[in-house]
Image (cartoon, rainbow, N blue to C red; front, side):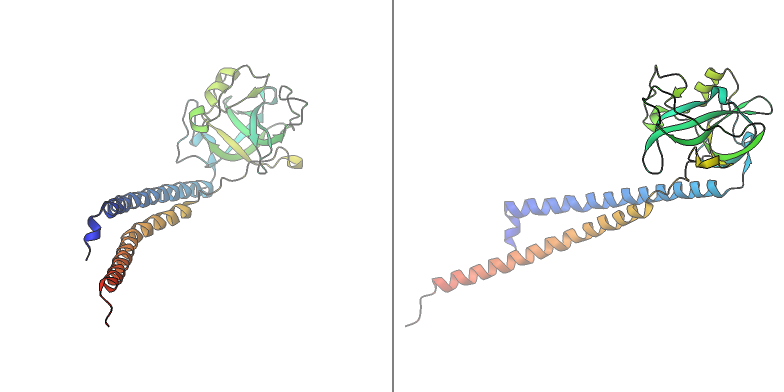
Length: 263
């Protein structure tokens, strides 16, 4: 009745089905791990954003590498902006995906150490990329700033190539070690994305809060792969039943044709 399963066509089909089932199960497990990983990262970012602000000196120091746990923590600092050594970071986009610059201004603390402050985004309003864009001035005198703590940018982490030979006061990556060498000063590790005080006239455009990773999408993919894995044996059995039914019908027709018609 089921001897057709030993034919070459059905042996290949069965082997493919047997290979698909564990493959789809493994893909579902991979998506489950992606879901758990993204959910954990979302929770870590949420906890950091909602944590109580602390002085920046509590979380970083010269040469310190900002950890994943402290990333996006809200910190405060009191000092003055050093606009004489301000630079712009090339090829940065705003919330509307317009390409421009980020404004990076050294912030000198009361003890002489320097905190790098990313004041936000400005458009490319110059005639060319070699021209320094017009940068709105920060508050003068002593001021208290607040922002999200960020780790140093590197090519490996960001995918941005650190180009050399750029025009004066233009950089590609925000890196405290490089800025310490440029400024000949003690620079706290990492930098902050300024959130307060808000700039006058809305410029520079402050960087928005980080968005959440789409963890539910990975959960949906996980369920989808496991449903596919469960559907493979069901589909295989449906095909077997259909093949058996078609072969039985063909056999009946053949016997009917072979039987002499009664006179």
